[in-house]
Amino acid sequence: MDRLQAMRVYCRVARLGSFAAAADDLSLSRATVSESVAALERYLGVRLLTRTTRRMALTSEGAEYLERCQRILAEVEAAELSVRGARDRPQGALRVDVPTAFGRHLLMPALPQFMKRYPDLELDLRFNDRVVDLVADRIDLAVRVGAVKPQGYVARRIATTRRVICGSPAYLAASGRPVRPEDLSAHRLLGLVNGGTGRRIEWTFRGRRLKSLRYAATFNLAEAQVAAALAGAGLAQTIDLLTAEYIGRGRLETVLEEFSSEGPAISVVFPAAARGAVKVKVFADFAEGLLLRWRASLPGGGGA
View 1 (cartoon, one colour):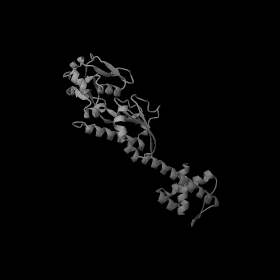
View 2: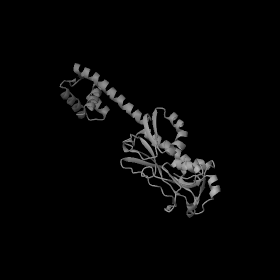
View 3: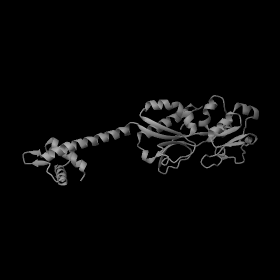
View 4: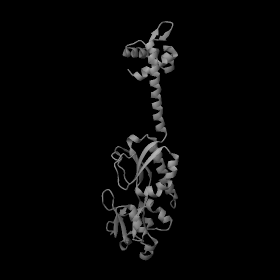
C-alpha cells in the first residue's frame, strides 16, 4: 500500500463526505477509492469512517487521523514546492573549473553582471590549466579546451578556436617575417608542453606538422608562452583566445596567416547527474555567450 496516496484519498473522502465525489475529484474509480480507505483502516487497525446507506461520518479516531494527515500532506507539498523552486531558480553553491586564459580574459570582466543576475548563487571559481576529475574534486561544471572523454559526463561544445603564430612588433622588425613554415628554422620559437602529459605540443600548419622545428624555450603554461612573445623573446603558436586582445591592441602581430589551422574546441562539461540542474545550465549558457561574443568580435567574425 502506498500510504501517502492512501492518506490523500482518505483526506479527500473526508473533506467531500462521499466516496463517489472523491473518486470523481481524483479521477479514480469508486471501487479504488473505497479499497484504498479500507486498506488504510486494516493497516491502522481502527475504523476511520462509519458508513450507512444514507450518510458517512468520521469516527473519533478518524477525525484525529484526518487532522494529522492534513498536516503531513501540507509538509510534503511544501517540501515539493521548495525543491521545484530550487530546480527553477539558480541558487546554492556552484563550483566551476575554467582554464586560466578563459577566466582571466573573458570570465572576469563579465562576472559582476552574472553575479547581479543570479544573486542566490554562491560561486566557487577554480582557474586551472590541467584536466581535473569532476567527481573527485566535486566540480559542478568545467570549461575544457581540447578533446573531452564524456564517460559519465555530458560535454557540450560551445566554441572553436584557431591556432595562430605571432610575435611582438619589435621582434619581427629585428628578425623578419617568415613567409613559409620552413622559414621558422631561422627564428626563435617559443614552445608549449601539455600540462597533463608533459609532452611538447608540436606546431601545426593546416593540419601538417613540422617535427624538425627547434624551440628556444618551452613553457608549461600557455599564458607564460604568450607573455614571452609579448616581451619579444620570439614567435609563439597558440590559440586565438589567448592572443586576440593583444593583437587588437597592436602588441602582437600574426604571421603565416594562410597556414593557420583549426585549434581545439571549447566545451562545457558536467557530470551526467547534473544535467537538469538549472544552476549548471545558466552558467553553461553564460560561458557560451561569452565565447560567441568573443568569436564575433574577431576580424571577419566566425562561427562557434
